[in-house]
Structures are given as C-alpha cells and as structure tokens.
Image 1 (cartoon, rainbow, N blue to C red):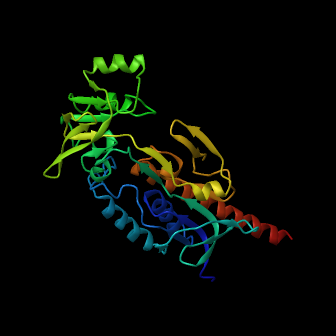
Image 2 (cartoon, rainbow, N blue to C red):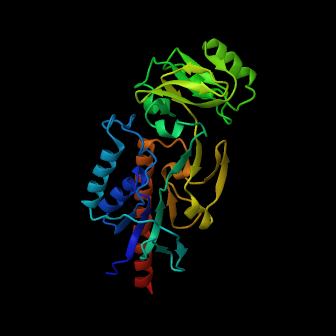
Length: 313
C-alpha cells in the first residue's frame, strides 16, 4: 500500500472534520486528517448547546474526537494543506507545508472561518470571556447582567433586540453606525433598550473583569458584558482555488454546497463554518457526518461500477 495514498483527505480537524473522519474510519476508508491547530473556538472555556456535551471545554471535546477517530485507523497530521491539484484520474495531489505530498480520491474541506473583531481597544483581549457574540452559546451564563451591544454595520440593532430576551438591561452602542431603520427604532423602544451615540474608544476593566464601555468623549457606561458582531471571513482559499462556486450572503460570499456538503468541484466536499457563519458545533458535527457517509457511498458504487465494467470487458 502506498503510504501517501488515501481514500479521503480531510482538511481541518475541528468538529466537522473529525465527524467526517469518524464515519469514514468506521466505513473502513483510509483517511487522513490534516489540521493546523487553529480552532475558531479556542478562546472559549466552554461550549454550549450540544446535547450531552453542554459545558464541555472545546479543547477537551476535540481531544476526545481525535482519540475516537484514531481508534478506527484514521491518521492525524499536525500540518497545513498548501494546495490541491486534480490528478487527472478522479483524485487530487495534496501538498502539505511540511514537505509531504499525499494522494486523495476525495477531499473534505472543513477549514472554518476567522472572526475579525471590531477595532476597539480591549475587545480582542476579552474575547470569549466577557466580550461575546452568540446568545445561544453564552446567553444563559450571563443572563440578567447589564449588557452592552456594539451595533452591527450589517445587521444594525438585531443583536441587541435578540439579547433583550436574556437581559432587561441592554444598552446599544451605535459606534460607527450612523442610522437605524424605523423598524429597529420601534423595537428598541418596545424593548426599553438604551441607545448611545458616538464612537466607542475602548473597555474599562477592573480586577480582570469588564466594568464598562469607554466612549471617545471620555464617558464610561457601566456594563459587565459586551456583545459584538465580528466580521466572518471563511478560510475557503483552497476551495476557491479549486474553482468552487460561491453565493452571496449578508456576510459576504460563501462556497455553495448541497445538503451533503458536496461543492461544485467533483470530488470535493465542504462542511462547517467554511460554508456558513452560523454553523455551531452541533451543526458542524451533523454536516461532517453527512459528508463522510455520502463520500463512502459514492466510493463504494464507483468501485463496484469499475469492477462490473472489468468483468463485462
């Protein structure tokens, strides 16, 4: 057996990638997971909303996933895929940053996305602690505290309006957003959400805890939790180089996939945040599973069709 030849190479070892690898390993497929070790949820101490795993740390979750896939013979490489070139024979040459080039009959790209945070002093340092994004991920843990919300250039006041269900003390900071829609204004009034105009300069922190939002004019508005809406940038360079079709979303272009994760490029699947910003851990696990099962089904039938053709020939 060629040690560099695989049925499937999974690019990215987060939830979606490991889930795909798990079903592929259980399907007796020679599978390689290449992971650069840059999970999106690394700053978070806990993950939530995953039945039976609620509250587990992301690091512990991924460690357990790696052990599980390895038990089925899946190989894991701490490396980075630098490209993928069709080999002209229904597969791909896949070079790695470490110098190795592997062969794959099929590719699963689960490289995730990058959260580009607002350029406000202190936000990056508090990210995943008391500067948060998703109410479904963290809203329960900070419920009923004084919330601050930075208005989104894309979604306006939507995040603040949604968060009013978790706290009745919500302040919306317009920051660089100049105007809100009439609908947003009516809903803000109905939710009793205070609106602060002017740019935010930074955060006030005492004893390693957020205590307020510092305005450019020097005011400090007391808050103990701040929600921001990052700019989501998918790590989809490998997919776009291969020519995968994209579609426009309110957050920019994302690679198009069908219900199984199949892209427009023959032999290439994608799952997780690389194909959508709203894919939580539980969604990514499901998407990876579907991709893995679909790929195995396709390979089984492809091999049987070739064997049948050889017999008839």
